[in-house]
Amino acid sequence: MDLIADNLPAYLSGFRLTLQLTLLAGALALVAGTVLAALRVSPLPTLRGAAVAWVELLRNTPLTLVFFFLVFVAPQFGILPPLGFWTAVIALSAYTSAFVCEAVRSGINGVPVGQAEAARAIGLTFGQTLGLVVLPQAVRTVVPPLINVLIALAKNTSVAAGFAVVELTAAGRRVALANPAEAIQALAGVAVFYLVITIPAGYLAGVLERKVAFAR
Amino acid sequence: MSSVLYDQPGPRARRRERIGSVAGALVLIVLLALAYRYAEQRGLFGADRWDVLYDPPKNQTAEDVWRSMVVVGLGATLRAAVVAAPLALVLGLLLAMWRTTRIGWLRAPATVVIELFRGLPVLLMMLFALLGFGWDAFAAVVFGLTVYNMAIIAEILRAGLASLPRGQSEAAAAIGLSRWQTMRLVLLPQAVRTMLPSLVAQLVVLLKDSSLGFIVGYPELLKAMQNNAQYFGNRYYVALFVLGAGTYLVVNLSLTRLAVWLQGRSTRTAGRAGADPALTAAAAATAGGGRGGAGSAV
Image (tube, rainbow over all chains, first blue to last red):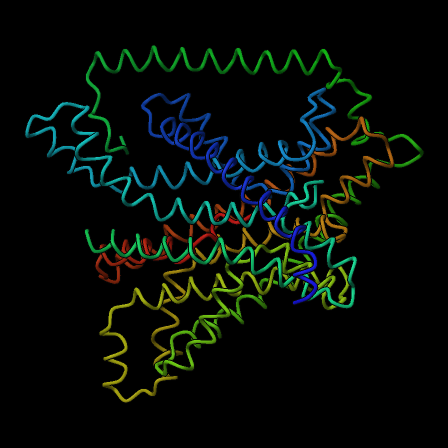
């Protein structure tokens, strides 16, 4: 425990960076993913195709490869992403946007078609159908999987440790390398910080999911 | 139209859609053309950036380069996955059964193990093995992949078990099967079958996660890309990346296709067997939830 207490500042700054990465990349991915989902359910085939290509490409690519592309390959194109924090934000949000898109789309498609048909049958306009009938149901079912996507993002920020970002995992690795005899304690300290994020969030997703299941 | 948001379009809407499609396509084409022109101006399509794939410098043969990438690099990636996947499946199965025993205090440790490993990044677990236990890189990669995925697989199987109708275990008890026989002969075969698509999808995640070996010093596909680029010169990064990323995509897309195909197959057979389609849908929904953050991990 002394080891963790002694290196608390390093852990805390790493933890802060992990949180920043999660929140920033999460916000960007939510926006981009929702736009992608809108494209994927749009009636325009070309836009649908482009969104499908993006999602399938990124879902079948390791995140490490996305980082690798930004750090080593993009400079060959003459694109020099600022190394470190912002590269990580770009890679994480691009990668996560594909998963956000899938979650949102399955939520929209999960609303039975009859709901919209019934809404139109009683004379609601398109806006009313969307705002009063379809979206409220879609959002309820989408929130739990979206929380799970964000939990995965929080864990995925650790990949940035391999690409010159001293977030939580990288901070813990430094402490472990400096104190080889107590490496397990050093890494256990990191684990606690991750669990502080992931377990409550997972619990929240579970509670919301049960609520939705009950409402159906 | 698969979407709930739109009516079947009439003639005017169809015309609007056609115009929109063409406009969208034009925008995409213009963007792609601009990107192409930009890349060409930077000499990205010159032979001096690609000859590493067919006529590499430094007295090497193309065969050497391809072998170092596809055979050695991808081979190392697959080896880690092929060792870790069965381990994770078996341990996940045990964990799922442990997690569903009837005795409450016995269940608790299984819950703790699952929640713990589900909530930690795979990379951190690899570092535990590498720095904490002092294992070599390959063992560290396999350890990280195994403990993380066994927790996820346990959750997938638990969701599968939970989705089975109660009548299944009641009927098994009625014909005098023991608890263990019920699990082995009646419940698990059904749960595994319902969850097969999720399990295959999880194997894709496992394979993708093996690329974290790059960070802990395991010489897999990404490392092979980097080594080749460092040996032949940075300007070959693009060509080598295209080859490496293409390899990943081919392998992962095939596995994903397999999962989709299995899903279609299992829904069809379930339908033939006279199962309630709503139940199958419910099982699929639980699977999505049970998979937790896993489905979208690295």
